[in-house]
Length: 205
Ligand SMILES: CC(C)(COP(=O)(O)OP(=O)(O)OC[C@H]1O[C@@H](n2cnc3c(N)ncnc32)[C@H](O)[C@@H]1OP(=O)(O)O)[C@@H](O)C(=O)NCCC(=O)NCCS
Image 1 (cartoon, rainbow, N blue to C red):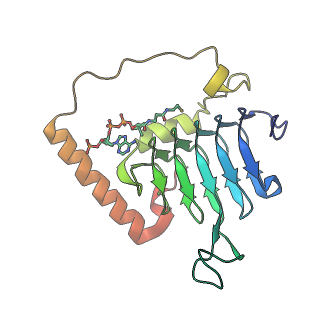
Image 2 (tube, rainbow, N blue to C red):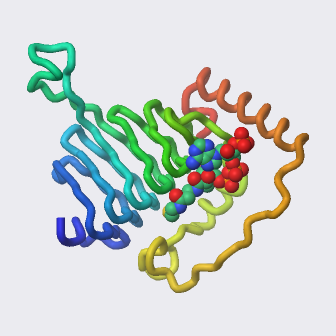
C-alpha cells in the first residue's frame, strides 16, 4: 500500500505497511499503525478506537492446515479473526496470532508474541505473552471519562506528529521488594478473577 487506507479522521497508517484483505479490516477512529507493520486481514481483523500499533508489528488472522492432505500444509486456509478493543497499545515488534482478542485498554510489551486472549487493562509481555501486571484502573477510568486520548485535541496523529509531546525521565529507583510482591499478588488475584468471571469484572465504564 502506498497511501493511507481510509480518509477517516485520525486513522494514520505510516508507510510502508502491508495489508492483505483490506475489505475485512474494520477500523475505528483515532488509530495509529506504525511503519513496517503487516496485517493479514483475510480472516477478519477489527481494531477499535484510540489504538496505537507501533512499528514492525504483525497481525495474522489466517492459518494453514498442517494435518490435511499435503505436506507441510494443504491449500485450506483457516480463518481466525483478531479483535483489538478500544485504547490498546501494541509496542514495537509485537505479533498477534489469529483468533486472539485483546481486551480494552491493554498494553502489549515490545517484542511479544500474543497467542491467547488478553484481559482488559492487562500489561502483557514475552513469548508467549503472559500477564505482567494490570494498569491502574481508576486512572484509566478517569482519563476515559474525561476524554483524555492521545488525539483528542485536534485530530492530528498524536503518535507521530503531535506538537504537545513531553518527555518524562524514567524513575531511577526500582520499586521496592515489598511493592513488587504486592503488585505480583494483586496481578495474580485479578487474573484469577478474570479467568473465573470473564470480562465482566473488568468492564470500565
Ligand atoms: C510494556 C511496557 C510499557 C511496560 O513498561 P513498565 O510498566 O515500565 O514495565 P516494568 O519495567 O515495570 O516491567 C514490569 C515487568 O515486565 C517485564 N517486561 C517489560 N517489558 C517486557 C517485554 N518487552 N517482554 C517481556 N517482559 C517485559 C519486566 O522485566 C518486568 O518484570 P519483572 O518485574 O519480573 O522484572 C514496556 O516494557 C514496553 O514494552 N514499552 C513499549 C515500548 C515501545 O514499543 N515503544 C514503541 C513506540 S509506540
